[in-house]
Amino acid sequence: MLIIEKLKKPEKTKKLKKPPSYAKLKKGLDAAFSKWIRLRDSYICFTCGKRGDQASMQNGHYVSRVYLATRWDESNCHCQCVACNVFKHGNMTAYAARMISKYGSRKLFDLERQKHISTRHPRSWFLERIEYYKALVTGK
Image (cartoon, rainbow, N blue to C red; front, side, top):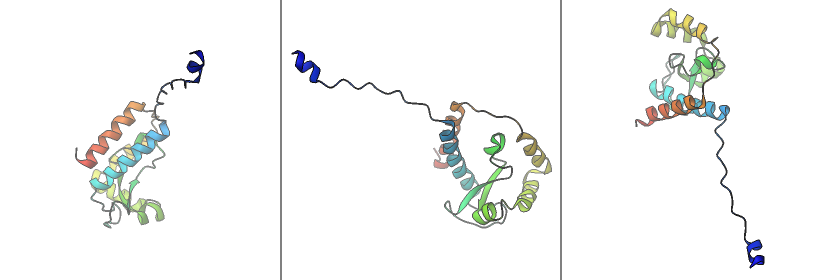
């Protein structure tokens, strides 16, 4: 009986699931948020007015997405075609004109000031925002 006991495979212990990394959470929120912005703007480029589809349009930022304080600010982000967002580096002159037209000039100053605020969100904030934007996109 002792020999049989030794031949049995040891039970596998359940591994504890690691919480997602901040990089993975940012990537997940970027994807859900980008889908929402493009859908919100009906796949029409904010800067040139070109109409596209989900694959051909992008989420353009007035203040660079490098700044976490404004990265997911809905008033900082608008649908843009690849030509404006990538090849024209955001088409910033037209972007600023549209921002002033839509929100007023004060908004540009507010975003510029806000980008310098140091921001560190907890994991729970990312998870909540991901679910929020996914629900907006699916309508659930």
